[in-house]
Image 1 (cartoon, rainbow, N blue to C red):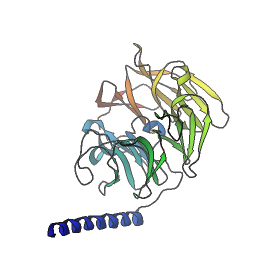
Image 2 (cartoon, rainbow, N blue to C red):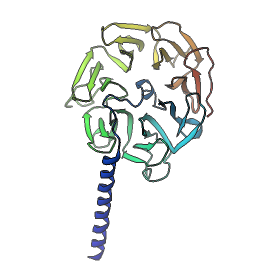
Image 3 (cartoon, rainbow, N blue to C red):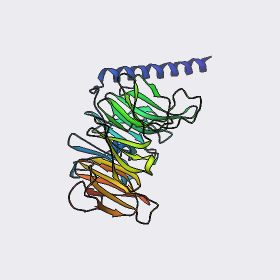
Image 4 (cartoon, helix red, strand yellow):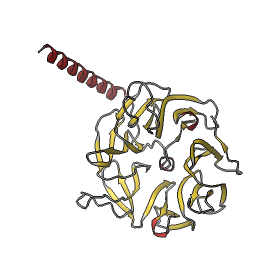
Length: 343
């Protein structure tokens, strides 16, 4: 009986402590505006390894096990924030949100047992919050909610969300939707196969959808099969599944759809009036290229196969597909000056 009483007391104290922590979080956690977005979609579709916010760049440092760092946009004043391997970085005024990449388990409270999950940390480091230790794919901060691909072995991968103070966890769409591209409270995504004929929602069309995070309504915007739609300045840039992955631009206001390149594109990012894209990796002429957003001024940045294309106001960052231990960078605009990134 004494052993049972001790166990009951320990459980009760643990539950009480959890309730106290949750109550403090809800009381003290600053909320964001409903329209706030934590990182551009182009970065999140490419691993979310870099995120620029209020004059600082938060990034996964390939030279230090992918650990979380911060620096100035000109790459000066480099500092480590957390000794864990991170991806899907999002930032607001107070915190950095990230998914563990699985490269290392890290150390400290909240990082025990397995190197997966969704977390946040103060910009200065410390005060870790764990939202889940389940496997997480792409995550996006929209307003005061984290929208994330959440894997559970009993159901597969759904699009879930949770408030940044750890309250109100829920399933948004019961399918493996990528929430990476968002603007003004809307998530722009391509429908994906549900893998279940009895699934409550049929997302097998691969069309362009818009999900309203405030009302929970879902709208089909463009009945055209596509992959990785990225919102930028009123346009959706995407890889066209109906024309062997050519890069297209779809204008949300006019409905105009323009082909930007007749080459097959494996991955891309768009920002600051520029598009950086990797051409067909199976081709002997594979290369990382760039062009303006109207499809002109095409230039080769580097021959070979590159991935994880992330952009800030000053630089474009990317890995060689053969080795992710070395990150390279290139000025967003100006001459071709690709170099190793050694923070």
